Image (tube, rainbow, N blue to C red; front, side):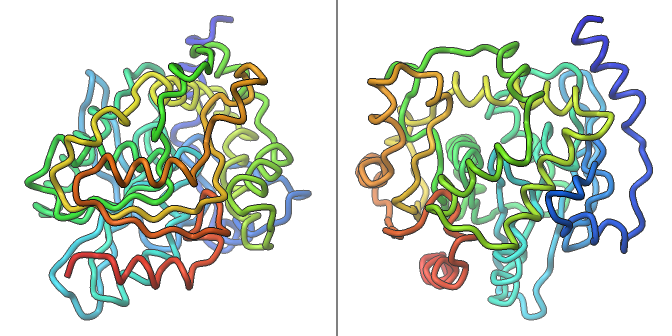
Length: 345
C-alpha cells in the first residue's frame, strides 16, 4: 500500500481517538520504559501540565488546529513570552520554564507547532519556517498578543529567528536556547537523506535510541528519572495506530531543517537578541550519515556560540560550560536565573 494511502487512513482512523482519563494520562506520562505507553498521533492520552486550547485555521487548503497553553501570571508585568519547542520536544517540556516565567509576572504562550505533539499532523503539508512563523503569528493575533518576547529552543530557535525576521515589530526580544541551524550542514558535507529515508528512520524510533541520544547530547552524559517522562512522551506516538502519520510529518520536518538554514541571515536580525548556550552540545542534523572525517567538525557549540554572537548585531551571550543541548532541563535553577536576568524589562 502506498505511503500516502496508509497515512490518509491513519489520519482518518485515529485523529479522534479518545484521550485517557486524567489519572490514567498522568500515570502514562510518568511510567517507566518497560510499560511502553502508547499515545495517539496528536498525543491523545498524554496530559499537559496546564489546560490546553486549540487555534483552528486553514492553511494550504487544509483545516488545521494548533494546540497551545496560555498561562496567565498572578501579578502581570505586562509582557508576554512565547515559547517555541524543539524537534524532539513539545509544549509540555517547557513546564519548568513556564512556571518560572509566570512567577516573575510574564504571560506565557506555549504552542505545539503543526506537525508536532498535540497539533494536527496533515497527510500533505509543505513545511517551511516561514509557514510555521505565520501560523504562530496568526495564533498570537487571535488571542490579542501584538508584541512578545520570542524564545526558541533547538529547532524552535530556527523558527524564532525566522519569526523575528518576518515580524520585527511584533518581536520585543529574540531569545535562543541552544538553537540548531548555526551552521549549514549540507555545505559542510552532510549528505541529503531526503524525505523517504527520513521516514524509514523515523519508523524505527525506539525508547532506547531516544534515551541514549538524549543522555549524550542533551544532558552531557547525565540522566535523571524525570527525563524518562519526555522519552515516553515522544516514543509513545510511535507505538500507537497513528505512527505512520507521525513518522511522515517528522520526516518532512527533518527535510525542512536540513534544507532551510538560517545561519546566513543572522546579520539581518534587528531586534534585541539573547543567547543561552550549553557548550557540551554536539547537535548536528544528519551527522551520523556524514563521512567519518566530517563528523568531528559538526556541532561544536563552543565555537558556534561565539560565532553566532558575533554574527547577530548587539547580541548578548551566556554560556553553560558543563551543559548540553537542553540546559533548561539539565540544570533548571542555573538556567532560569540567567534567563530571567537577561529578559527585557
